[in-house]
Image 1: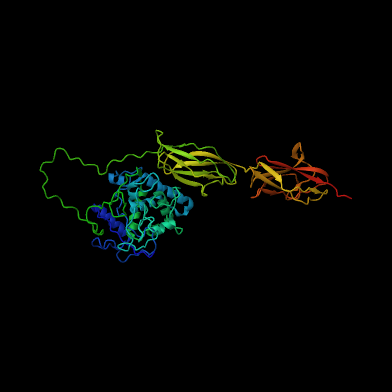
Image 2 (image 1 turned 180 degrees about the vertical axis):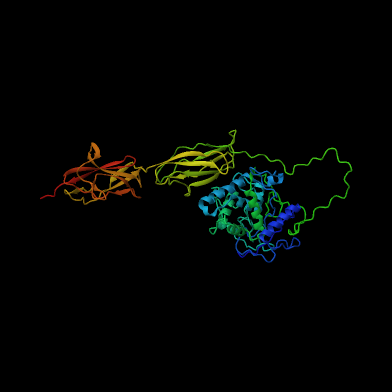
Length: 557
């Protein structure tokens, strides 16, 4: 896409201090100047932008230009009292916050060198959709109605012809950015993810969109802990230095502290941005929207009426600046929610899955919580998909179920640990066991008599086949022993034998395994000077046995 970038204007600042902050942010980023004028010209970019002309995730669509408060969110040890505005702005809706943290965990497993912080996703989610319109999402994280950017028809924004036949944006002529993270359909076709395991890659789902954004930002082997890579990643989302400055300001704000608020109670943006058909409309801030941010707005004139000569006896009460919010339940503990015995044979799947339930201090379920499951210990077992970590968001009933476990070849016990992401609730450990592959039957594949002369080598090899419940049994451990007699299964001290690496006789072999077809060919067998009929016993893990005769006799005269 050789998209022609469309510029958005910052909303009118409500105070001189906020306007000054906007100027400082833009000056620091060397943003191109805003084109002054009426609404017809407000969407065009001034000349002189040094941002490279390359594809973007959002098609350079509109975004919310609100800046964070001057005061940073409260942190432990902070001595500054935070005004209510800052406290509200620092709140991120529970489901949206869980999606950002789950995406950070997922990318941390698949691409740890990217060093993706969830606060970057929160900063982009803030400017792209106002944290999905204040957390107006359902239990699965899907917006109640699509969030759509402007039509990308070249009027004020990029000119991008339809690429999805209207499947995502409802427009069969031009594309529009879609969803909480504002992906244009062509970019979503490449980067879309199914993060909530519902079988769909939905740009209107905050879990899918957050993971897609995380992986998009980490493209080209970027290390986001490097400032130049971070700037490049943000500009790859929207090629605007003002956009970069705005995202960076929210990134630093969220890094200083944030908290969870109930879904639907997040602060709605006031600046221009995408729309949510069927949802609350954008409500632009009062005042002109074409104010040049390099010129702070004039403070309002004082009232012309004279104040009363005598002050009132009772000072007027000031209403709270923000409505009170309902406190979010906190997970105090995770409890086993019916996990069965975790056991599987090597290479097989575990029938049971680790299941936990988040509870508050009174034992009531707490949902919408990101739970991290981790495989711990000396094992090659993995979750479905091959990883040793998986983040799952609990349902409204507080239940979170880990992905299916698959055993590796290493036998023994290991631990599956469940913990709440970014919470202090103690983790819960579950013991899982991998046992040897087993066979319930083993037979010799041939029936030719096995003979040798004294001191000679048996000409024919011994091959056996193992099965379990009628199916071939690959990778089953096998033990081969030259036994003393049918009544005494201890190793013989004379007669046929195998040889070790130094050529010394061996009459018991362990560590043998059947191949992918359940077959095992034994090493060469040699005879000593003893003659007669001897017994070779083959035993598999699982207890299956077969006894084979070996005859040593001098050749006929």
